[in-house]
Image 1 (tube, rainbow, N blue to C red):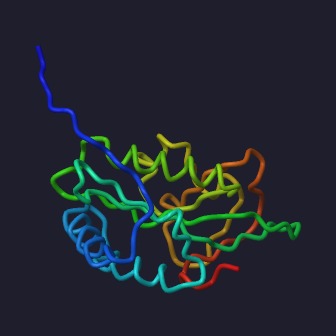
Image 2: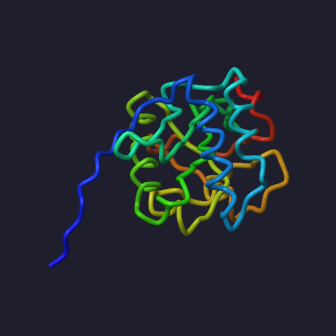
Length: 182
């Protein structure tokens, strides 16, 4: 027989007064990551300072009242080759506190962020990440949609997800700078 202690999970938008704690959480989460630039926490600050920051889609995960995870979705520009603008987001970064990793919390936080984005009418989400991990949420190589990213990224880590079926088509998206989306 397995016994466990129930935990209380809360997912909510981040608050400005917790930005320093979120900074530390992101830094610590990426300190043990297989692939990391080491500046993910600074990148999050850049995203917040950009005109593309969406406070309702920058979420924290609390476990029993403790900050344990963070995810952000910010606007990015995507215009298809036929001139159509697609309401698109960038998922970055996803961070789970080192002591809470590999327990399914990243999965829970990602699914909730994507659910909220879909309810808010966003059509697509992009990210740079592991196809093995993000494939479980429906992300596929952006190249399968004929999407071209500006920037020097290995094509296998440039991933896209349609929140609205048929939203993506040939086009380009710029994620080289957090302030580029319109």
